[in-house]
Image (cartoon, rainbow, N blue to C red; front, side):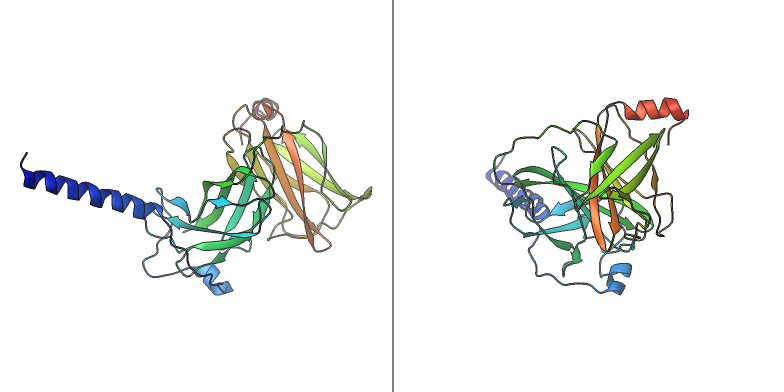
Length: 281
């Protein structure tokens, strides 16, 4: 090959590498809070609905433990363009769920829009180690969940998953009990041993349930069967694919405060539920 040909090949490789690097880097921009209309429409120049090749791009994936820092991210389509059209689902245009790889440190937060069409939320990860961040949203009428890994500095010692139990503490004297029947899960709440009959609507529903599978952290965000009214029982239809254990995180609202209770579903719960109910959900 001539010297001129070798020079052309080298130039092409340099520009190719620069393009790949530029696609992986997200600019750091100032936060701009969107109003309610911006959250519901989300229209912006050059933006489109999320499609089949979308992905989550996190600006800086390293955090310090116990320090409140800003998590910045964008949803991009198959061509690397920032997706700007989001539908309001359960009173928010974007839900962010985060958990450590050992299924501890669960958080459900709601970010604000940023000037570049992305999102930002202030968050503190209590302990060091690998975490998974999920962006749960609806775009163009299509519900989607995208995920990315972030690393929290510090020593990581995975905690064992707690054994299955039919009850769990939710803080401030609250205890939650669960009854399983096939794919159905029904939760009831007590406070200091007294039944709570006036669970309040939270984000447009009586409660929210997130299931994370041990190992790969496969994600489900399940909404209750009942409408967003006050009441006692919080019921869900839950399909748990695979033979691994799952952690179920229930969030409910009472006296104006949101509480979280976590449960372990034993390995093989999905197969057992399928056999009892006679069908998959």
